[in-house]
Image (cartoon, rainbow over all chains, first blue to last red; front, side, top):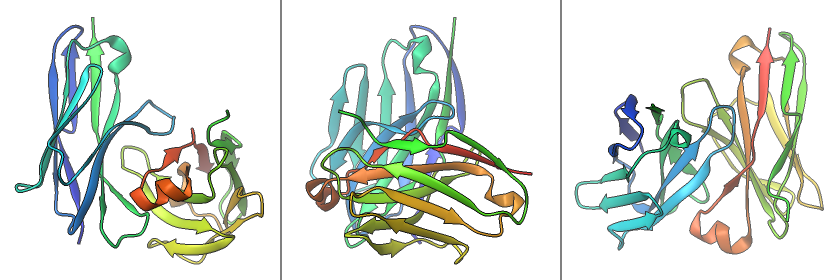
Length: 113
Length: 115
């Protein structure tokens, strides 16, 4: 069964600090992996998308890495801001899965003063 | 250019009732996918429509049905509502190019509460 697991489940950091969120997947064969940011009660917004051949992708203060051999990805947030408080979801699609995406349960990040 | 729009934003129903949720895709998008997101969980795929037909379906009972109109907008219908149907229902749209790359753009969702 294709699965996506994220850690930690929740995280509290001080404004200005950096943090790293983890994603492990068993989806096979792999097509691409993306990170979404979801504010409470809102739809997910795409941060990065990486294919099998890419191992890093940046979007402002967000940097995602991918190790397709170990089936692990991380999302690094630099110089966190209060507005970064949200759920961060790792989403994997697999070849032959049509347009279905396999979602992780997310990491709930809270940035405090 | 409007993004993916969903209506209503919030809805309260009682057990056994029926509900219809609506979604308008982004301009130029012909594919609509529906997801159910329970509190604290990741979205679960319900089904996908393009060319006015259901193309793929997740593990949801027949109480969940949908429709796509010629203008690409879509409806999600849920019959005989259960308490467990309470969730955020997300609609995502794709263009033909996006669909090939599995890229989807999400709406803000409809929050359904079943009492």
